[in-house]
Figure (spheres, helix red, strand yellow):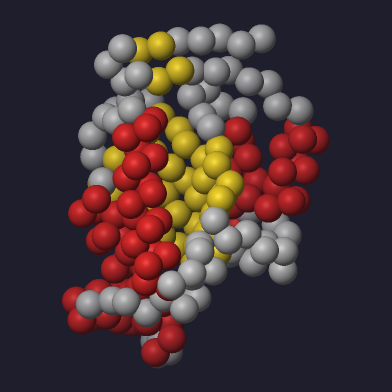
Length: 181
């Protein structure tokens, strides 16, 4: 059964979908077939239409691809935060290992955080976190607030993402450079 709600202010359409648990598991297994680099959450500071949110996503994605001179692969789902009624995205992303842009401030922040967690973090660990901080800052300039984590298959992000396929006011998008690994 489909329920539709249209909010003139937000210009969203809400669909309630029932997803069979075995279908959700199949999606998760399919997503697990990729070597994802990042697990991200991108939040918008203001209410936007879905079209406006996609434009900001595309701007951020194009800047990543410009930096890489290559396509970025992703599986993205959207959701509305109930408390603020603001759209946000969750995504798995790949083909990002060659990113190296960061600022000195990103580096120092990453080093300080990692030294609290790890007695002697490697240069590579600091570099990876500093790069993620840089791209969080880029999202903040464009649209709002970001969390970017190194993908950890043990944390089951792919299964977490598939729950959004069945939630109200959710859609998904697969795009970019997706290769089977």
